[in-house]
Length: 244
Image (cartoon, rainbow, N blue to C red; front, side, top):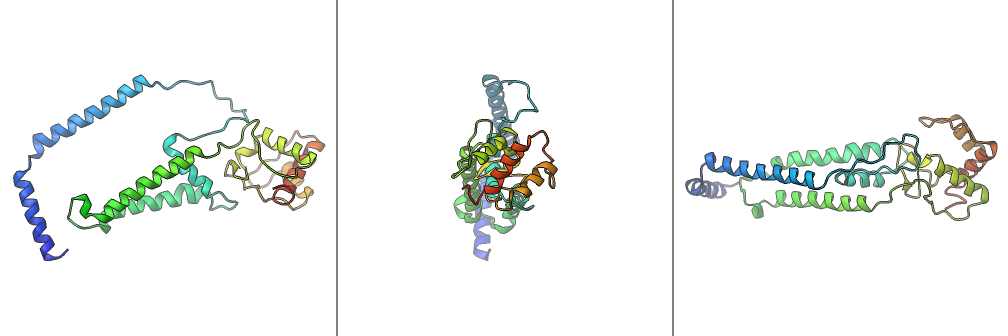
């Protein structure tokens, strides 16, 4: 800030102080009135739009599709964008790195835009930052609200060239809740299991071993017949190679 800007600021400040109203009781009364009005509106909305109590939760269900509340849709869409097969995505990038970077930038904004001017049209950094944040939240909230809801009972994964064994394996995949940890062709959960879209090509024995004995955080699946194990392995072995 140069000397002319400082002098202009001092003149404007002195004029505003001379013509303005005192903090007490004017500002205190105004803040109390607006706060009371906001609380009253919240109470009225809570009475008018009551939250319904649904059926008791069934922990054994495999067809329930969890969805976040609308104000978390932007994070929900970040999870979809940063879906991957390594430890950095999506959990760390989408839920920790990017939100904290944005929070740090928000905290640093007053230190970056250090001008004394309070008129918003003369503070381009603050104005553009506010617009960018609002646009980011609104856009990703919209994307998250329109995102596929994942897989439940009766859901379908569109794949071509499925053999009869692979089709049976796909139905086993859907019926046993595999989609709660895995994603295929952008449908299903983006974690904590790897994306299975292109996981095939290692041979049926490899997938049989994983299904029967577990791997990493994935538990062993018991109770399948030999034929069902074979069908599920055939389905996984063709993902990204025969079945696309």
